[in-house]
Length: 441
Image (cartoon, rainbow, N blue to C red; front, top):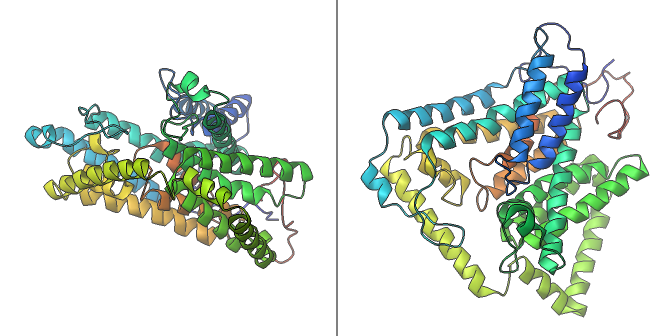
């Protein structure tokens, strides 16, 4: 009998060899997996190494050790092709580096727009980039083989980690605490707080990516789970507010709206929710315009023109440099060391790896979206993963970094989902299953 969450594996993540028994070491690896997911949004907290990266490595090592001679996950081709292209571009620029004279005159700035020397290396960035593209899906693939609930629990842990960072940012923005400065050394500035992220934009990204998963969990049959999901959603929304990210606020609204449109549990109440939301928003702006204006200023959609114009000037400058990089070397870019500089992931791909890297990246993103959209017919967990991945693709136009692993968690989870068929008519499939039950939704 096929139960919800136990779709038939096909070529995407296909086990090989004998059955995998969950050993004590594998259970430890599962714990490492969840901790890695929770810590991945904290990319500003570096203790020699980022905690998320450290636990990712520990999880993989524990899975490798526990599953010797047993079945291993096989990564989808669309994941492997992107990893191969990253390696190819990195090797090409090691063997045939870009003209040093051109690289020396490039514009490189910090987040405040101050010109700085290039501090990254092609080889270093290329190696770090392969970690999220190959390491994350492999970790989730191992986790799913040992526990069918692992994919949902991993997404849930990622949302919880983002919510913790969001609450810290909100508290810092209010001036109640200065935790981001104490923990990461990065202060809240210009009314924007980073939480445990390296920049407020990254905080907004992780909070937005976690929202579809929590909106899905709000439909849980257990009251305790629904209450927890609502509280985490509030923390995520506060994180976006504290970040002051214009792109984050816009994509958050779109992701929430799309969740209500696509997720079956919300469709029947969509007209009522839309009416109530529009009515409340209208009343706020009509009865107390200052509240609405304050909210818009907080996310930098109005007012504060000086800060906005400064941010827009920096974005325009680095985008122009990214275009020059692409024009200088359109096939393979100028090297992976510039991969985080153009403030637009698609332009970053063109600047650092040219058309080679952009095609590989687009194939990776589109294939993940297509797989999750198709899989929603067989596994409802595909709904929040699809919306989160789509939100990540939208945010990539304004504030993600091409090589940062936090933006790849939804796509990595999708890669680890087994493709499947519809259940037989006689199968007993509950509409919703709680995270604490035997199967995922």
